[in-house]
Amino acid sequence: MNQRLRTAFQPVATLASVALAIFLFAATSTTASATSMRLVNYVSYSYAGNSAELGTDGVENLDIGSPTYQLRLELWAFPAPYTSGMNGIRLAAFPMLALQPGELTGKIDSGPIAFTLPPNGVWYFSMLLTEFSGSLPQNDGYVVRDWINFQTPEYIGVPPPPKKVTAVEFYHQGLDHYFIAASEDDIMTLDTGAIQGWTRTGDSFNVWDGPLANTVPVCRFYIPPGFGDSHFFSASPEECAIAPVWFPYFFKESDAAFYIALPDTTTGACQFDEYPVYRLWNTRQDSNHRYTTSLATKAAMIAKGYIPEGYGPDKVAMCWPQ
Image (cartoon, helix red, strand yellow):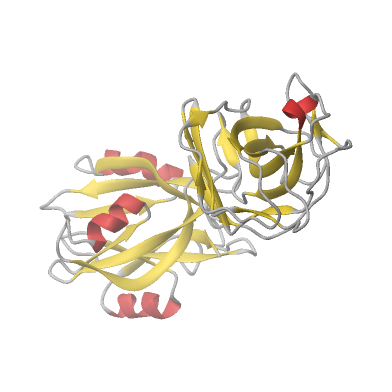
């Protein structure tokens, strides 16, 4: 895992201590000389196993009258974005030399250093610039001088929450077929021409890459040559179950190609913060479906002989989140 972030300068003279057992921060006093210093521009970290690498574009001593004591670049995990005095766990530390008054270092890269994962849970990592105080028994006597919070939380031993992804529509002119791709691999395969003939139509809609309380998995079947040489998607659990019974030549590629909400099965209405996806079938021997959020596209496909399939009078197949 790795993250990189541009710093937002916030010189601090806030002091901190860390309980010896699990390194918990708490306010305290210091005897260090220079107290105004900062992390410059970008900070970054990466880790794998029990090794990490910390980096920054530089460290600056803003005090033009006093040198610093020895400094350290430290990576910490907190239950929320760090604020002064918050309890947390130190994961890695890289020692640096003291800075002279007004000194600005170049880029700093720790190289591989010892790293310990925090316990399972959701954690917010922060890069801390600390200075040796000479008087504190906690955190090896180092106190916080500046910090930068990484915005994206780390999910250690727990699954991350579902996120919105874009289902992209493609068209194959030679086949006169449509296809929606919601995975990065599928989109890249078609965009790069690894499977030739497919181009984006410019249409897309949002879906979820994991389950939420109001979503259902969308099954995906492959219809082999002779019957369509295309793909069929459904958000209906009943349809996903009955399709291979009615059409034994269908090949199920996924029980959950993506997740999306179902409309009211009687009225076809979506929730207030969701919008209709219409499914239309080409009625041909080479069976193919088109999925669209556009009423104009729906009308145009019906005019070409496509049949709408879905719930309610408007035939809504799914409901996409904005």
